[in-house]
Length: 313
Image (cartoon, rainbow, N blue to C red; front, top):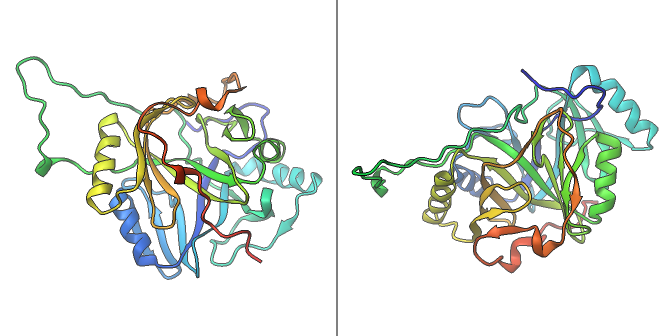
């Protein structure tokens, strides 16, 4: 059953994101290597996870890579009240972004990012996703031969990480206008926000930068083994730059970040914390040196390099 927090007015999911890239063939190759179901349509590409009917991303061709918009899912009974609150708070209503699907209401978000409110089924998890640890008993082989190794295939999009010019101000904006809630943060460096109606530890992550952009998308897999398999399949496909395998502190998830052809990342994530709709999570601020990752390789300097252009004219 879909969760709903009593008395809370807010979005329940990131329905999908809109992305522009200069070469759709390159995008198709990357996301197929990552284990997603990439479908070609008249407008460009759509990203699905295998076995899930949700369209997680809509990708179109443009002169350079750029995050075009975020579409946020709302319950039908909350739509009017959310729109009224945004208008009352002085948030500007705007025209729909070109080539986006019809049916939503559009606003100018923080840093000018176009945001769509869309009545949609809840696609954020309603429970902590299943995590498996597979072992073998004494006297049996646990060998998995490379020729028979399965391919990591994400189950759903866990969260979206967004570059922003002011982490603390953006956090307040998303809380005030869209009902998201701070899970944990690290001052002006990063903030992790969850949905009020039940979501992973973060539905939306905010990363400090000089301008807006996409930092990474995070995709749930079912085991630590699949995180490792995902890192191997990306390297074998020629995508050798990334970060991991490791384990985060905030959110607690195992990770591997594969660097995409445009300088942002796609993350394999397993066993992230879950915040139910009826949970009062003890939000807190943490020192950067104590909150980023528990173990893993050194952080590559380009991990927080925002290579997107500034806001479009």
